[in-house]
Image (cartoon, rainbow, N blue to C red):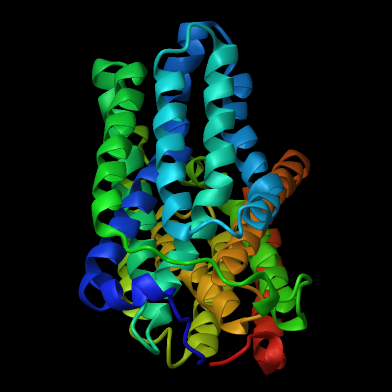
Length: 392
């Protein structure tokens, strides 16, 4: 795999500060994912405070994702001549502003404004974060570096959201967003000290249009996230329908999230040397598990076991697609991250919508079958077209 080279300042600082820099990026992803998904656990509280329906409050998540899908690529293009370190510090400051706006909002409209600011910031954040991780990676270890940084996002999903939800229920949702703002501010100060300067690539070094290899990777990424979120959007409904007691639903979801973190840890050993094989194995397990969930639902034990296999295999997939996009070298690491960010969030929105349509027309069994079919197409392309990914 061709190595991604940092700017001149990062070359000197990166040799001694590579791991601290990657850990800061992992912590930043923890804050970012917690910020993005926090309203999911606090929807009833926010809905009750402003006397709006849960469906309307749910738009706080949808608007965020759509902002990311719409602005990830344009913002990355517009800021491509600004150093990645500067951009990352700016996005962390943006997370502070977003959380403060939500925490102090006098009306639901202002909460929505705060979330829109967060979505706008998020659109650029992951592009910059992926690019910085690639540039700070040791030679030949880009995949491992991305896995380490992505562990922060997984931890945000596994720990940040449940802990934030519990805190919100205990002392109020405004306090939770205030805590997130403080964490983002502290991380901003730490990043300013730890992260090396990384110069942007000269504009002439990269093509202005998508290459065939990157187009293949991001198309597969979009397709995968559509299939994943056809079913995952309704995972709570699935578990409750199979007989999971409501009192332990949160614990089950926590275990599922932790399983994804374990899967990422296992796969990180193989990302750099066997990217395609690792991705094919993960996607194949996910498609099979989804299909068997559809066939076995609502047998609780089988749904839980298959759900555990599904979420374990899902853990590494976002990182695998990130590494594949960076490896194409069709664009800068930041632009590769932007396209992954945009297609992931676009897939989430499309998958949730498709899953809702299937659920309205049929039942959860068919939602799982449709999800398996979409992910299965992804697996088939990876198996039958070795050149669908650049290497591995």
